[in-house]
Length: 130
Image 1: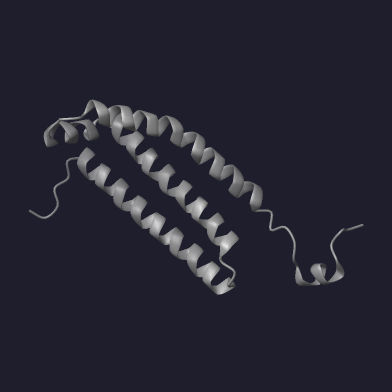
Image 2: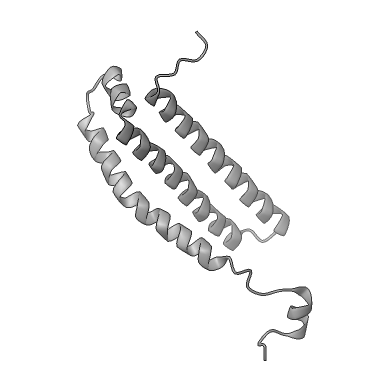
């Protein structure tokens, strides 16, 4: 016996089985961000007044570079998940909703890639073009 209506069965409406995974991903990224942000704030406070060479040397440290990449990835993934919930809840046009979610994902990926590229460029002391 099913609690779904006949029309709901015919249209395939119902749970897409993605809500729980989305909810968990949002919570896990939030939990991961707590120690990462605390570490980042403490480190930046310790670098107050440091010159560019000292900051570059800090970023070039393997542990710091890995933690910065994790921070950037978790931040943008968490932000994208949160924006998706806002769009799903408050945008009523299906076309605008889909477009907003896709645009948000692309922006999050582009910004995360730019941030990670920057950290890796500094960490590996890569000089581009000249």
